Amino acid sequence: MIRQVLAVVVASFVFVGAHAGEVVRLSEPVATTNTTETFGSVLDEAVPLVALVDVGAGNVGQTVRVEARVSQVCRKKGCFFVAVDGDATVRVSFKDYGFFVPTDVSGKRVMFVGEVIEKELTPEQAEHFAEDMGEASAAVAPGKTYEIVATAVRVPKG
Image (cartoon, rainbow, N blue to C red):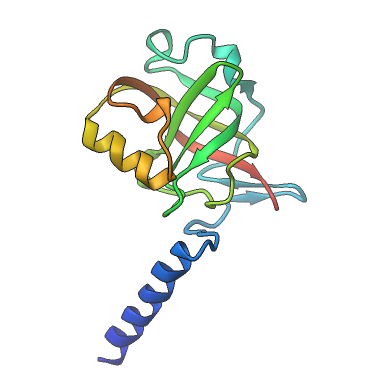
C-alpha cells in the first residue's frame, strides 16, 4: 500500500514538473565530455543535414550520421525533435522508443545517427506531434513524410 501511494506521489511530481517548465530528463547519457552528452549509443563524427541534399526517397533505408540544429522538441518527454540545417528539415524519433533527449535541446546544434524511413502521418498523428511541441511544423504535417529513427544523439551540455 505504501509503495502504491509513493508511486502515485512520485508520478504526480513528474507530471506537474513537466508542465511547470522544468526540463524533463528521462534518459541518462551513455557518454559525456566537458561540453556534450550522448544519448542512445556512442557516436563518431557526422555530416551537416543539408549535405544529404534530399532527406527522403534517395536515402530511405540508409543509415546517416548527421549534424543539425534542433528547431523543436517534444516538450512532454523529449521523445522526438525536429532538426534543421539550411532548407533541410526532418523529424527525428528514437529507435524502439529506447531513449529520450532532455526537453531543453531546442536551438542547440546536435549530432545523431539513424536510419531514414518513409512514413505516412495521419492528421491525428500530426496534430499529436504538433501538440507535444507546442506548435505546428512542416516536419509533422499529415501525409507522406521522411524521418530519421536515431540510435544515438549527442547534445551540448547546458
